[in-house]
Structure formats: C-alpha cells, structure tokens
Amino acid sequence: MNLKNLRSDDSAVSPVIGVILMVAITVILAAVIGTFVLNLGNQVQSSAPTASFSFDQVNDTAVEVTHDGGDTILHNNIGVTVNGKNAYTSGNNTFWNSGGNVSAGTSKMIESYNHGSGNELTSGDTIRVVWTSDSGENSQVLAEYTMS
Image (cartoon, rainbow, N blue to C red):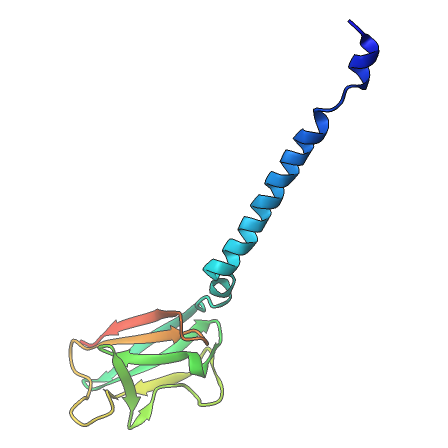
C-alpha cells in the first residue's frame, strides 16, 4: 500500500460538497417560488383585528352596537348586517363616523336592514359586526347578537 497516494487522494470531497450545495439551493428556490405562487405574503398582512362589541336592545325594533375595546378599525373595513343584509340607521348605512376610525366607546343604533320600508328589526333577527380587509378578499364576523 502506498501511503503517499492515499493522503493526496481527496477527489470524493468535491462532489459531495457540490451535491449538498445543489440541494440547499433547490430547497431555498422552491420555498421562495412557493410563497409567491400561493400568495402567502398577502394573507398574513390582512388578518382580522381583535375587537370586542356589545349589543344593547333598546326596544323591539332597535339595537345599539358599541365597540367596547380592542383594536381601532378603519370605518371602511367594518359594517353591520342583519340576517346577511346591510343594516341601516334611519336611512344611513352603518359605517361608523365616515372618514374616521371605529375605536372603543363608539356606537351605532341599528333600526332596519336592506334599506327599505317594512325591514325593521324583529325578534329572531341576527345582527353581525363584520370586518372586511382592504382588498375585499378576507372577512370575519367580529360579534353576533340575536334579537329577543
């Protein structure tokens, strides 16, 4: 056995390092391309706010919805529905403080829905506070109340 040749033969090291680098580059490229293709970056940015709302049934045909605490929400991103239809307050839609934000302490009186006569609130109606993302792709019910 020739020890001199054994010590100078390191031909197997280069191919192993090359394979490891190729696998690492492939995994990194797959992760980056997958993130763009699946649009995962935008979904993280449009998560629903954390906010608490209370409902106070004033009479048989009116409920006051109050933002009790949590995140402040842009008025364009929040609305109120009754049985899945837009809720109204004496003919005005239920976006809070047009041009402002919905923060703790603000409230809105809900008296009708679907903007028409004969659509007053009645027992059994379900009122929901709904948040919608800026893009309109995501929405979430933040609070729900059923009329008694």
